[in-house]
Image 1 (tube, rainbow, N blue to C red):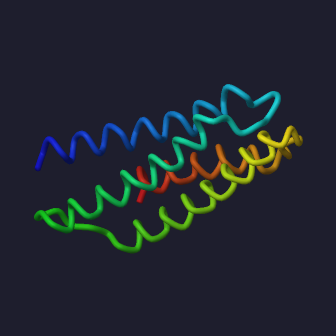
Image 2 (cartoon, rainbow, N blue to C red):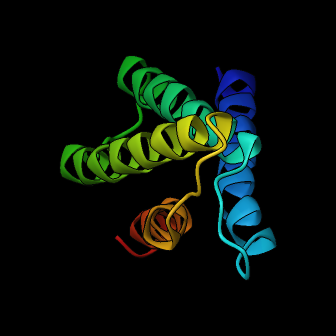
Length: 115
């Protein structure tokens, strides 16, 4: 179970890196990259699997914290999907939408660390 937890945590952190790294890489000319879209999905799937594995084991789960992080992640995922659809249609991605993906991801990291 420890190996599974470590693998899920590793993938979860990679999803975070894709979200924030893509945001920082395009900060001057904001857009939503494919890797940010993929990172949001990776975050969702691995986050749910991490919570499920903790629930099955002896790990304590702070359900309020997980709920807040899930709501923020859903907002990130929706913004990433909308941004990628705009890119696919060759439409400009608004700065607010592009910065929402990275900024909310950063807030989600802060919730994970400081709560």
